[in-house]
Image (cartoon, rainbow over all chains, first blue to last red):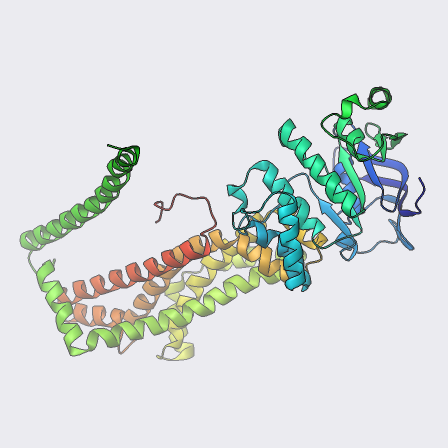
Length: 265
Length: 271
């Protein structure tokens, strides 16, 4: 990894508060350490229940860590000293969740402009940019549709560009394409890679799909079962631009796939 | 016959008659009620049951003399004032309590217990404190409105999708913005349900208050007629009260349709 780390996770641990009759609470995440370089697209693969969403929630500061430290540039957030959370770290961490979490009473354009609206940065420039993103992901003509009137894939795209529109340097993605059909997923992956190639963001992309982890990532981390820690790390040397549809046929794909599959238990 | 003709014929045969069936059914029901009313008047005599025609004549007379408008304005003044105060507290308090979970846990049983107080029974005591003006009636209306809006808004706040709130926080929204742009709009369906219960109650509370202490108002006119054994006057007052509630309800329905037009619901399902 050439670039300097923008995000470092050190000895991170998480356990939920004790409940009577179930003590002591088990560690969900224990002693997890890794770092992410600036502009890197890091994919994280793990079996379900490996605390992947919890990890992203902790990085996004929606949840507190029970142990360890997270460094964001020069800022350090040690779990022992952390008194209050700063969700999204002052708009520097964007989070595309598993569910699209679009506001059901807002149309596509209103949802996409929501971050600007709440941050008080809604101006003509923001509107122009929102419209560019909408057409970049093929949502033109659906600006004034409500989420329930859109297909699953369209909602995912809207949720994705709603985070891109305010330009956070780090974007967390939690299996954002898990709930759509295979064809739509390939399309969404291509959209994501295209947007990423235009503007190199740092992306942490969590998935349980090994193919997706290889198709998208510069590097793939494999998480172990609970308590979750980094079980293995695989650089993905497949050159870009990649053709997501035919990623299977790329030289080296099969070998990486086998390695990762062996590590995912 | 073209395809367009066929489809339009099809949709007509399905949707329009169904609409008319509902309207026709309503008219039939109204006529049946009027008939039963007339039958009641004929079999029981005008002292116990005022005939519909006489009742409507009385309303027309009241309207002509200006008495009707004075009464309606007086009742509306009391119910609107109490409703606004009750609503403001019923919305504001849950939003404040939402920020203070420990205070909520401490206060909630007291609020629920105080709900058990028979509010109409308070009126004589309130008159003792606040005199025979609008104040005691306004307070009773306020109490009725407050509990309904408080409970629905409170339930609505608890029902808000926490993921939407987290999402807004990550995007940098302040807690105030979240309250306004996420929580409030999420709970509007609850709020409108509460409104539909609270508004008729507010009007009834104002009317019952006027039975006890008033010099004008729909309730006063009913009570005045009762004291004179003027059954027609009582019925006229009841019809006016029912009409008031119906008008208010249709205004609330229209507001709800506007506020919740994003919802994928069957628009015919209106209460």
